[in-house]
Amino acid sequence: MTQDSTSLSQPPVPHQPLTLAILGAGAWGSALAQLARYNGHTVNLWSRRFGNSLEESINAVDVLVSAISMRGVAVTAQQLQTLKLPEKIPIVTATKGLDPDSTRTPSQLWGNWFPQHPIVVLSGPNLSAEIEQGLPAATVVASENLEAAKIVQTVFASNRFRVYTSSDPMGTELGGTLKNVIAIAAGVCDGLQLGTNAKSALLTRALTEIIRIGTHLGGKTETFFGLSGLGDMLTTCNSALSRNYRVGYGLAEGKSLEQVLTELGSTAEGVNTTNVLIEIAHRERIPVPISWQVYQLLNHQITPQKAVEALMERDLKPEFYDR
Ligand SMILES: NC(=O)C1=CN([C@@H]2O[C@H](COP(=O)(O)OP(=O)(O)OC[C@H]3O[C@@H](n4cnc5c(N)ncnc54)[C@H](O)[C@@H]3O)[C@@H](O)[C@H]2O)C=CC1
Ligand SMILES: O=C(CO)COP(=O)(O)O
Image (cartoon, rainbow, N blue to C red; front, side, top):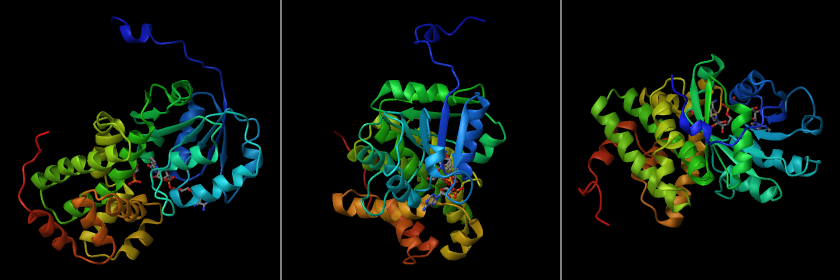
């Protein structure tokens, strides 16, 4: 077997064991901890509910990873600001959400609070349950600081987890965040048994919608065709392991949002993300027809059937506008 020539031109990567603080001992934080430990790294997995204090958890670490759900990011970062984070260590954000107060992404928030630290976004088609089973998966680590992204790449990369770098943190983060809204729509589509044609039409038009808003907010078009965009959309919109998909599916079955969320008992970021996305879309005057129907559905303004009708009866138009 010939060696991949591209690997010869890559710089040597540091393989020494590092110490990581992973904030958030939920499904994703625990899976990331397992991946880092698999590579021989030491992990301080911090939970607000048990174990070591935040101060103890960040002591002398080489990398900080946040796998906290959106609603906990601001409060945890505020706590961190009162503590002594080791100088200039990379901060990795793995949250897929939008801040309801500022409408900003988690990486924008971390960058604002910790300007001396390189910020790295980690996002991809990564259902934690599959990763914890040791099934193969791939992800993207994106940063304006490519050296920091490469460090994070080597921390997590293994024969079961392939990690790509990217210089587009905004596109990488928005792909993972916005697809959660579409996963709710996909769950509705499957729950109503609308068929394969409808699902393909939904996902294809949804990608156009994600690219429209994602590029407006600073992401690069090609990133949305990559693992963190199309890749994560395919995973989340086709798996009953996805909590956002299950929200849509449950709504299509006639359950109330409250009932679905209670049964889920876990984070479905797409619910908050939809509300923030619609606020951004209205403010910036960006058409987001699919997300708008999801918004109305989540806010008890429309039934799943009416949402489908509304999408099918929109004004006729070309698929692509000539530039
Ligand atoms: N589970 C998955 O497959 C994946 C999840 N993600 C993202 O990772 C983030 C976390 O998701 P999960 O771990 O699945 O959710 P989870 O519900 O299992 O865990 C949420 C974590 O956030 C912490 N948290 C929530 N509110 C907090 C607060 N006020 N203060 C401090 N900590 C708080 C919880 O204690 C818990 O550790 C979400 O943004 C999700 O979209 C990303 C990729 C995969
Ligand atoms: O982001 C995810 C997979 O990449 C997890 O999806 P859910 O949050 O919908 O479970």
